[in-house]
Amino acid sequence: DLVRKEACADVARAIDLGAAIRLGVSEANAGGRGRAAILADACEALIGAVFIDGGYPAAAALVERLWSERMRTPARPLRDSKTVLQEWAQARGLPTPAYREVERKGPDHDPEFRVTVELPHLAPAEGLGRSKRAAEQAAAAAMLTRAGVKSDRLDG
Image (tube, rainbow, N blue to C red; front, side, top):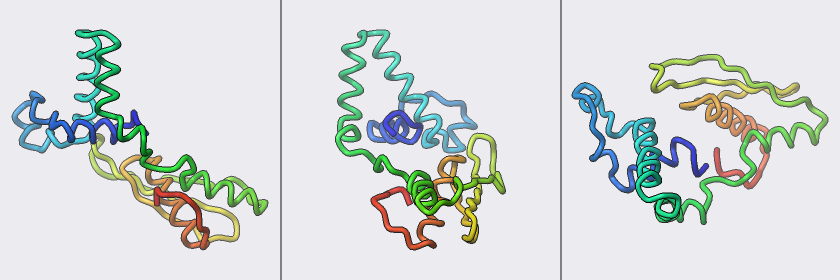
């Protein structure tokens, strides 16, 4: 989770990196300074620039300072909804859950996915997300909730 686009974008927002990004007029007017992909790329570029200018020690110090809280407190447990659902299914002799993308809409730079998950003897469950992975997690969480499964998961 520390190097995912969302984490890098959150760090960029925390240090107001968007204010320092040079964008074209149309991208700036379209809200580009707040777009996660642009912020994440700018954050990675900042780390790279610090590395080139000051070497590994400077880059490591920057990452430690900006990510220290995230390193101490992970955003989610190691067992996400897909893992919990798969373990739950296997414990009952069921096959691995089958995920299927049923819809993808929106522009390439900001898509939204709808995914279903299916297991024998259970109604399919659906999830939405900005990535296939997020939609699959949401679908798994929906199926777990419908099945009444309690767990330590925090992602749905």
